[in-house]
Length: 458
Image (cartoon, rainbow, N blue to C red; front, side, top):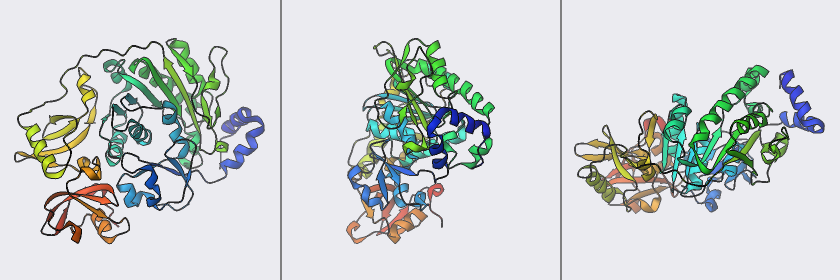
């Protein structure tokens, strides 16, 4: 690769005797990986994916993809949300964050969604995930991935971090700042990142990263955790940003990362032990990552007053939702039923604890139940993607390599198999045993409801 001389000089100074190993690794193909989405596929069923996998050290559900074949984004299992395609060492930040079921977690710079969906799997549907992305176009991609992975308890927003800090102060148990960076850890897989790199760009990124951390700090409750991560190698964007933050925030301290992968960060300060942070180089089996875990002093949860979040009409929409679930599902509606415009949502109960949602740029709170149409609710694709197969009253299970599933993902109407004789009404469609969409059954046929923007067209 045609790497910038200033970058090579910094890496030589940083790595010393390992510099030659670093250069040798940089000439090798980049690491590719996937993470099993345990919200939709049990970890023990991963062999069904038909992929050549090897466990990676950065996440309990993460794997190296040993095969060099591309196109896994066209796999029916991918469409079903059974896995997320992710560079292996990118999984490290959430592993260090260590979210637990029932916690409230903010992913402040969340697009495209790899770390958010990893957090969601760890929460197991309990608690709240708030995924924010400041760039509107990227926020839409984030929303699509949250939906594909079947996440029920997420809020997706497109807000400036300062606005979240002002309105959600002390609200979150854990906050992740995976900050935009100069992308040195992407050099092996992104030629654009190589060509755009300059020392000045790295320094500019550091200023922005510190500003984002400053916005994140108020969001963390007393006793809570703030994790800072980047996919770059430079001192100025990693250890030096953490040092500058800690100097201005004595209420935070750096604590041990709790993991053994990678290697300790560099000791850049007499006041703070940056060896408690974690670095990953290509020699460690990843592309390049830095992670630091910071703890806020104190231990009391903030007391945020409850207030209505959206318009709830129990006389109409709760009855409509109950009718829809009775018709298509075996479970009861989860979350508060909220109407926004002509759409209805199943909203996480934790959103009811936020007194004022205005200005937070919320694109989606919870699961889109459907659209109100002629006195009923027409179900959404998201509603079925968030359903477990046993929760579906009717389900058509198709083999991942079947012509019928290929036709469904192409947007075609399909014949119902003999095992589904007599099906009538909204019916889930599954790749194996993982729900990937729905249709409407009638007369032995299934009318397709797979969204046009997601279809495999060739």
